[in-house]
Image 1: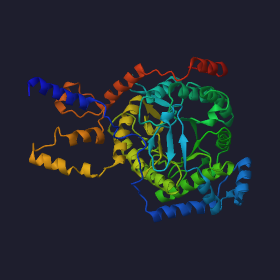
Image 2: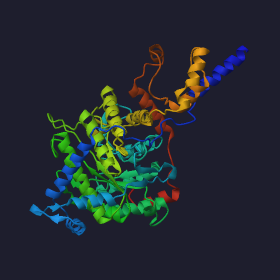
Image 3: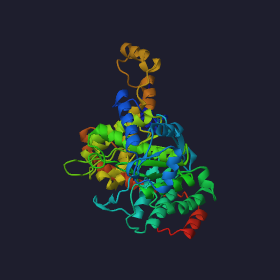
Image 4: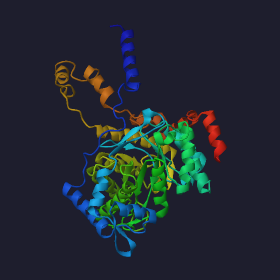
Length: 505
């Protein structure tokens, strides 16, 4: 063989190694559920305690319209004006609830199916501070930031849906805030999207905007591509009237919802982890009963989010081991009920992109995924105990999620993968597996190759500038923002929206 052909063969191998794999080894939607921190007996104990709480204490501060619907469904009047939920009422709601539903993207290829054992990472949060790309310091989040975050994540394969991650603090009017938030989402991504409505009367006008995007009056409701995040229960065990009103409006306009319980251990729920799970489960079941009393089977993500408080200081502890195990347990319980599960993970308390950031995000998000949380919120970009959000964090977390999906994919044990013949050929032949067909096939199929993490040896790393993860991620985020300017609204759609709404960007 000539030197030229050897060089050509080596170049071909190097090109193959640098190329994107023919098969994505770790796409979103991998199966979770193998990690179960609770025994089946413990799940049953927690569930029975939750039902006992609803049957004995029930729910307080029930708005009149909801009280009438709940009584019609079988709720009973208790002490101090509370409504009690008999066991059969709760279990009927579980039985009639939607077990799966399509979370549509405007681009159908980006839609996801919620439920079962599929795991998807997405976003959430209402950060009021942005970690500035230039200064590396926090400042108030703006509407421009929200547009930038939306188009940044539009390029990230592992953000399966986008909920607004920050609040535009430069918009003091709450209607302007809600309208411009949704506009930022529909302008900059065709993924499934989600938002919060400050007041119920904001829902109908925003649906008019969504109809413009969908193609005409009534079109959005036929294939809703936006989901609402609502917290209708205030811990401990009472409803919030404004949020309940939003629930009614969303159901009227066919907007799927995540009903989020966000109790805080030791503050608005018991400090013991088991007691916390029992109360939080009861409260999320109260949301489920509410939704199914209004419209049986309406799509709702059972979003039981355990939040931990540092009991010494009162500070939120989103990156704690307790958060990791409670969210995993919450996912396990919800999956045992057969309901679409939503949990919150990757809520680091770190302010910088540092070792604390990586450890807390990796631990909490992996636990939630292994336990089978269908939708894992807050999982991209969030920092500073949800008070902050970071462009660099988005791109680093996207790569982290690929590693998690690879772990979820597991190990495929087949005759071919066991490699008996390949082992024989190596032992009796060259004495190694480098360059073999078996190795090349595995290289394409079984391994994920990070774009940001550095795997060079120290001298090469130093020669190339000794950049840390924060620096690499900043460069990558800036590059995306410089080149990705999607046009997801037609000129006619944009003009019509601007004619009917006060768009401030």
